[in-house]
Length: 378
Image 1 (cartoon, helix red, strand yellow):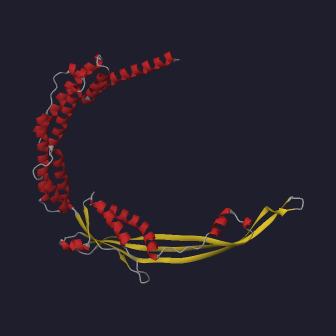
Image 2 (image 1 turned 180 degrees about the horizontal axis):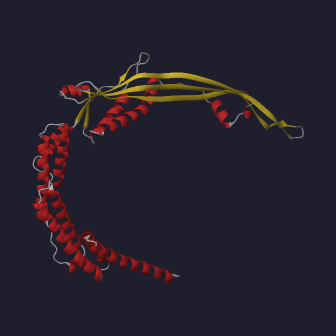
Image 3 (image 1 turned 30 degrees about the vertical axis):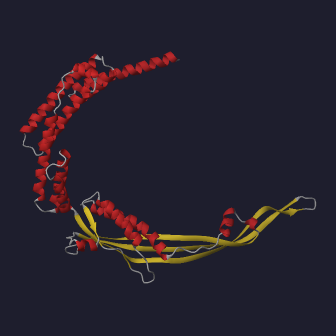
């Protein structure tokens, strides 16, 4: 049994080895020289004396280097925009190939003289950053929000290629401020003649959402006070108002039910024999529901001309329930659930402010989805 198991392992390893060799050679024949190099390197790390893998490595490495150098020469002669980015890619690929060989002793025996293009890659990164930097400056000078948005992307790419290239960090800030959509958010209005209700919870949740949203977008939200203080030239005005709501609409439902249970032991005879019979009771169940619901009016206006860009009514409902009961008769006739209900007493409902908060929670979910969807285009 052990011998048979060992034979299976040997066959599996043999198939794997042959597969690795053939896959490297196949990649070479298909012209996928880089992958052929990496496949051969992996093979030689596990089997340093593998002759086919050595042959594949030598040929694939030579072809890969020639191809990348040819691409670099062609790109340098090209007038294509952002040509230095492809040059960066090719120099990086050349250095990665050299690193792969240097980290494999058997590979170094086969290719002892690898070359890295450290300075060339650094220069290419500089020129790639310069291309993006210059493109960004031209767009930023156009003075539109859309061009500033694209300029920001160019400056960001420049900073990726060559961190802190010239004054790119300052230009990133300038482009962001020019590209960002500025939205004044008015405080949530709660109009009620019956209750003194606070919008603090709802307003706070909205503020949290907007602060988190700003970090990932080109939209910035301001309070009216902030906008006034910095003399903001806003783009949009976002207003929210609970203009139709009811808090604490109460309903009480009473249900009377006669219940009974058969085969209940009622007592014993003089001879100590059990006497069974039917027990009865009348159960009265009370169910109180307090319904709170309303509509949030959501509007986005163009700050400059007052035109409504988007408007929606968002509904929310919360129903609070309490159930209790009483019974007359024999408790043994009741089910466990009926006993539990009859042991409960009527409790005080939540105050109006808590009910108001609860029905705003589903509205908050709708609101954040709407804001996220609307401003995703900017």
